[in-house]
Image 1 (cartoon, rainbow, N blue to C red):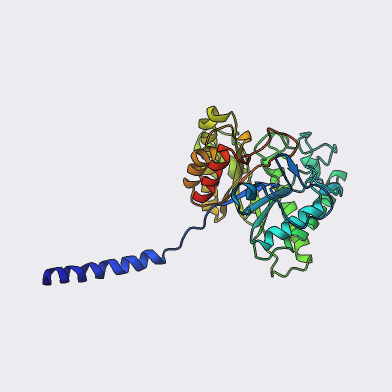
Image 2 (image 1 turned 60 degrees about the vertical axis):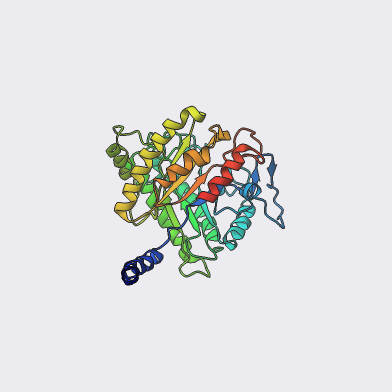
Length: 360
């Protein structure tokens, strides 16, 4: 009996401090999940009228009964003073939905598919123009100055709607490592790209300093997000070298991410995971070395052509990178039946997605 008593006391001496230590360990925040244009349209529905809506509909809420952690919007068209963005979303609606998202405690990420200022073509017009854009003695530079100021003014409007610091993420000049945008690596040099990034951020910071905001300072985050990394040898050092070479600099970037899409259905899983690992390894390494945050800034499997994609492909990938703060999948186009990245209602894929959200 006495031996048992001493054993109990000894165990208590060791276990109580261990329990206290374990209980005091900080809990890692869950990965935030986002969806592009989640509240303005979805598969087979849209709310693109200029008029205000008294309520909000959400693709994620339709499936899970939960509001999105993060909503993505694009401001392409703001540079030309359009009233709607390149996907027909009224900018007035965008502002209203950003306000509602912030009031729910959620976050918003903004990208910008700006038109080619030399030709007037869209973002996918890869006519080289960056050398002229950054030359202060050209008309194209003057045009771009006005465009950046217009984009900055709109972003400042969104920023003033925040109810908490850092609810807004601005993702500038994304996927420059591809060849499909006029700011991509085949249309410009790394030095020209970095000059554009730094110039854009500087103008936006100046605009933000001019607006009144209930948050002091009116804080937001800027994200750098390459896509495929094929400029150098197909190894870890090559991917990292490219990510670093085009990096705008610590003063200008808060989040380092990557965009990576799953193509080819189930048969494309190995290729997707190979590219995602390569890109995330490079982003995670750079983020750790430079004290930045990490995100999977765009991903998805169009039409969810891979069974259980969310729980069997994306979820294990996210768990390999515990530093990832958020992941964003692309939109559910209301007018293109096969162009969706969030599952349709009442499907096996929807059940898989609900399971994924519970496990994040």
